[in-house]
Length: 184
Image (cartoon, rainbow, N blue to C red; front, side, top):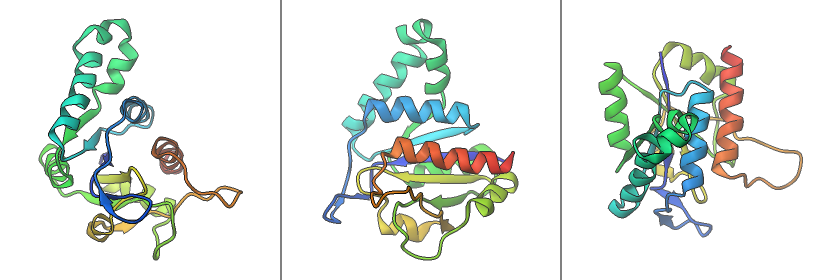
């Protein structure tokens, strides 16, 4: 089966728990593409409903896949080929189902323990048997409606200090490493 990821910019929260649409950053695109190749993620969906944000992301992707960047840095091209920009989570879900000709199990991530969570071993096992779409939230995390739509919530990452606000790129790397290395 296959592992897919989604970096959601909407719906997510700001620090005051307001629903917002976060902006796409070039660093997120670069790093999520690299992670996708490194850990065998078939596609990483960049989800943002704002047309201007999607256009900027597409221009960056085009530069590295078909523009000068493709010849300048072929490894970066490989990473950017894994990125697909969509306007909604539903669009990403439909693309996975169309590509795999099957259902997709959506797993949410969150930095805080909100409810019972799925252990890494459980999700690793799911990845080996099912098509899994692992969802990451930008800003201050995935909106509750996304978490409610998911099959489950992956257990959060805890460090050794009383500080738990990793960048989404860092958290994604840790999570993918834990999931894939448990799977073998």
